[in-house]
Amino acid sequence: FESRLLAANDLPAETLDGVAVSLRANIEKPDEIALVKQYRAAGVGLYRTEFLFLSTDRMPTEDQQYAAYREIVAGLAPAPVTIRTLDVGGDKPLPGDPTLIGPEANPFLGFRAIRMCLENPELFKTQLRAILRASAHGKVEVMYPMISGVEELDRANSLLAEAKAELRQRNLAFDDNVSVGTMIEIPSAAIAGDLLAERSGFFSIGTNDLIQYLLAIDRGNSRIAHLYDPTHPAVIRVLRQIVETGHARGLKVSVCGEMAGDALYAPLLLGLGVDELSMTPTLVPSVRYLVRAMKMSDAKKLAAEALKQSDAKKTFALVEAFYNERM
Ligand code: PEP
Ligand code: MG
Image 1 (spheres, rainbow, N blue to C red):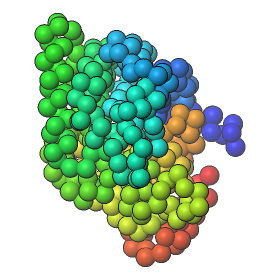
Image 2 (image 1 turned 90 degrees about the vertical axis):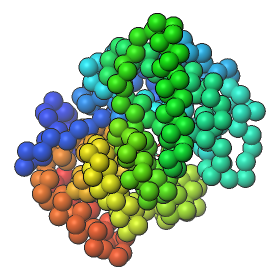
Image 3 (image 1 turned 30 degrees about the vertical axis):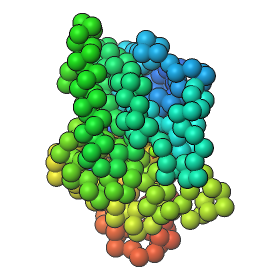
Image 4 (image 1 turned 135 degrees about the horizontal axis):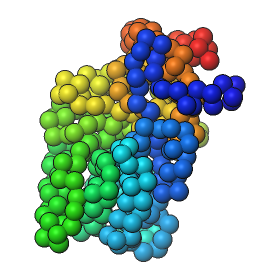
């Protein structure tokens, strides 16, 4: 089985009916570049920058961040690297400055990610300048986590514009046309996604959080883990809605949550119209294998059937049968 997957590693991620699928990698550290190359991912779809902040007890400086981002961007150029701005809080505390995010009764509903960044504009702009400087060394896309509505997106973008102006004053190079995307991982962002689409370069769906918030299931609570259900009819409908909303505005729609790297669910996502999947590097071979074993027309039929189901277990059975017939 492993050897079958590895044999497909050097072949294109293309369906039997000739549709090329973009498979990218999720990474946290520069030393993962080797894995991205080994598994021939088409770049990085989610670079979780938290690691830089969580591994020291001081905030990383602009230059320290720039060095890490540049290493990844230059190391993978010309392949694109989607750098997500800081997503601390929730399940990811911030040792660098414990006063920034205090104890909270509901951390997942609390002061995390873009919310914390917008209240700490200097911290946020330091990261944005470092990301922009890295964009001079390859293809960078910026991505904001935990956007709930237009105001946050507009404020983030105006801080990005300030960061660019500051770099211009310092005569530092960056890609002025850097693409800026929005993570869709809060139900409000999915439901009012048309408003965000007007202001976004692309959408990337964070299914880990999106499912957690849609179903009110703490993603880290093992007692209710069996209720965390990617085939719940509400999840399938919302995914479809996000894809339609993004496509109506001509946006690329990716998925970078764990669902994307699960070969069981990848056909369903592609059938729903998702343009790109981003996953842990070691999972790329199994998803590539399945993509090469399926027709996109069959994945579309699978998604159409899934959209008709009222029972999540029925949908799961359809998804599982699709997978078993091809693996
Ligand atoms: C997600 O929520 O699906 C996601 C990709 O982000 P994270 O798991 O880092 O919250
Ligand atoms: Mg998330």
